[in-house]
Length: 294
Length: 271
Image (cartoon, rainbow over all chains, first blue to last red; front, side, top):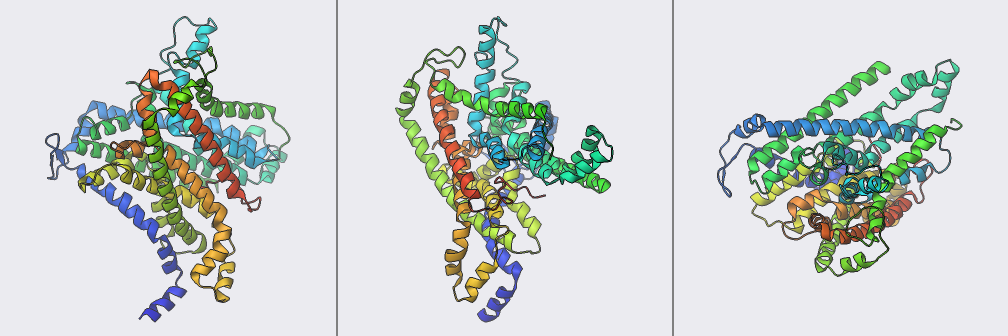
């Protein structure tokens, strides 16, 4: 029997692949899939007192969520902030990647390492440094007041949606830079030259050749920025004030001082579903778009 | 290749400034002789560093972060090495789904992972602390480690391993003598980067530590008190220098012995 198994194993690639994959798949199942499943089931329970939970099935938490103006508006705001952040990050990072892909000849690698280096420093510290910059007694305000340009500090800089958007754009830059660069660098430059030789203007060449060919990178960047920023906790907590609060701050409260685990679980599930819908829509649109181009 | 474009060059340099300048304020103000972080700078001092060094809670938090980071990086790199080998070496049914499943922890909002682990941990009646944090970090670091290792292993000439087996080495001998030396720079890079990710990770720690603070948790607690900020700046500056050093070392290692073609930059994006 063992012999049979051994000879089967020796010939079967999938068997070998799955035995190599098993630790990772077990990890994902035990530490993510099962916990997520349990979180989902908690969203159908009821918190009856501070320590007690009624385990009978109900969808009331979801009704609670959608009847709460606060929660719905925070969900909408989280999605809105993430979309703005994604768009601004893409728009500002694209020219940089374009420059490195097409104009830099020597040491491209070094440019890329330098671009991604700040991303590796602690997220908490990067967010904190924006607090230093935007604060009422921070870098911008104190400099402007010293220069005599202001008499009172600008208060809208800090504890606002704007502060959250600026900080997140800075924090997630690397997630736009990497996929954009990869897709731009793959473009065969002779295609661009050919378009130019055939009489297309710079703008037309970009619009008809470069942009469509870099689409995979754009989509990749949209997804890997949008998904995590929807659920960002640190930035709105440190810089958002009441105006820039997002859904994750409420989720944290439900698991912390408010102590309503089922409603927290329902909010987290709704966030996860939102993320899934956006992922599916973006991927589907891309597929259609790429089909039309090719 | 185009020749020159000064507008784009200037824009790119400005973008670099946008990326770097905010981070540089931490070290600058950490040497400033004042409790507020505003201009003009009032004088040079190292007292914030002395103050930082005197905090015993900080030492405890640092030790906790190191323990979690070492375990998380070793375990996630090991798991990721097997997985990376499977993806780089074999074509099999369910490949994309398996790849997707392993990548999910890196893609979904961290707060959801934290909440899910919190719920199961409490339901099982376990105590919060560094153990669930480490588990969360292993889950979170594995996809990163796998991306780094796949980039390293892909294009590896697997006939070298087959030759070794044919010449009579057993599986372990082949791994030890043939594969490991070739993978080693990637493995070390993965260990270092996973350690840094775990060392800096905040959200999972925030939900799961209970009373055993990690270093980011310690900083978070201090940030609320304006009079305690200067020593957080000093700590932040030290962490930035340390992280930068480790990351540069990892980048350098990762590209060691790689052709120019493959010397990309760590995270390989699959479509």
